[in-house]
Image (cartoon, rainbow, N blue to C red):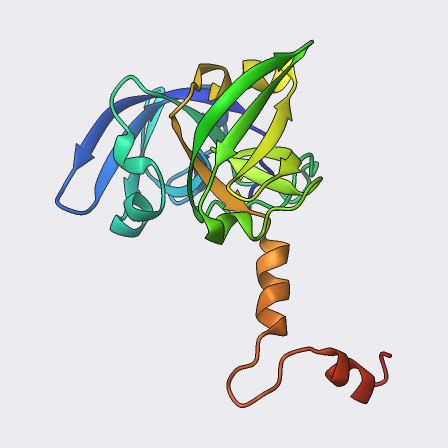
Amino acid sequence: MFTGIIEEIGTIRSVRKGNTSGSLTIEAGEILSGVKIGDSIAVNGICLTVTGLEGSGFTVDVMHETFDRSNGAMFQAGMRVNLERAMAADGRFGGHIVSGHIDGVGRVKRTWKDENAVWYEISAPAGILRYIVEKGSIAVDGISLTVAKAGTDSFQVSVIPHTRNMTTLSEKKRGDMLNLENDCIGKYVEKLLETGRGKPGISADFLAENGFL
């Protein structure tokens, strides 16, 4: 589990790709403290398992499913990426619950400055937008952000200078692809409301019959 508070920007040292999967070696510094093989690190919001440690870098394997769901196919040597270690049990929850399981990708539609903040409008598929609500949370390339506006084909976030300076958002321009992960709460609620396996979903009638209304 992650919180969407980026700890460090790393640099991809090498990319090895097979037919459907591959591996990355990433140059890093601060986040390597205490990390061991088998630990999880979010790379641009993608939860990946550390399979090797070598000096100032670490290696992770990337599955076919990850390439299909994210912008992982665009990874290349020299690319800068957002990094976050899995949350420690005694850590502060500064962002929101981020699983590191990417729901899909969006694209930067436009950006503009608003005094000290920078606005990003991000286009996204309908399947992702259905879970986005104004003032709710969204993970963008692993960064926990608050949705300022939600539209029919895009959403907007306003980013403070600190967040831009500490992440790769400052490098993003119109047309760039971003990994998106919805807040998991909406998906769980929707699942509970569904009818399936011969059982009714949660409805007004169900709540009334069970003494909730």
